Image (spheres, rainbow, N blue to C red):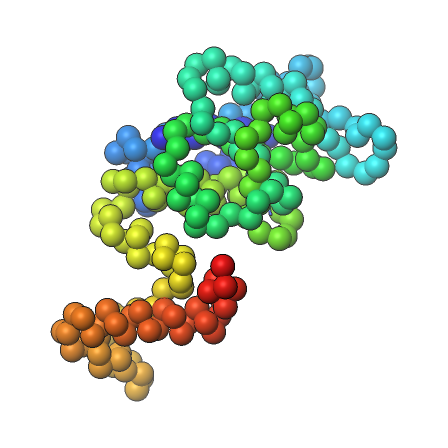
Length: 225
Ligand code: ADE
C-alpha cells in the first residue's frame, strides 16, 4: 500500500515513519510512504501556497492550484482509492475506520495549515475527511502520521505476531485487559494468581471479564454503540 502525503512541512514527517513497526513495514515492501512538498507545486516565484480569504476574515487559505497540480501528477502515475484530507471537521478516526482503510489500495493524504484549504479542493478531489479528535493542531502532519500508523500496523504481515493486531484495544469494541510481566511481585503488588495458573480457559475468561469491566468503567459509550 502506498501513501502519498502532501504538506508544506515535509521535514515534520522525516522521523515518525523511520522507526520500529512502520520502518519494518517499509523494509518488507508492505508499505511505501512518499512525502511531497506542496511548495514545489507553487505557481509563483516566492513559492507561496496560500492567499487571503474571499469575504475577509482572519488567517490565510491554502490555494487550489498547488494541491491540484500535485494530486493530478500523482494520479497520472498510478491509481488511488482514497484522497483524504486531515481536518478537525472530519469524521473522528476510530479503529473501524482504520480497519476499513487498511483493506484499500493507495491513498493520498492532504495536510492543511493556516485556516485550511480552499473548499473546492475538498469538493473536487477529497473522498474522505478525517479528524483525530475534537481539538485543533497547528497542521495536518501529525494527524496524517497518526492515521498512517493506525492503518499500516493492520496490513497483513506487518506485525510479526498477526494475532496481536486482532487483540488490540478496540479491535473487538472493548478496551484491553490489564497485562503483566516479571517479576511476580513488585513492592508488594502481585500479578493476579489466575495468570500464573496455566489454566488457559480460565485465563481467557478472566481477560474477557476484565475487558468488559474496564470498558464499562472508562468508556461506557463503547458498549452502547
Ligand atoms: N488539523 C488540525 N487539527 C486536526 C485534527 N484534530 N484532526 C485532523 N487534522 C487536524
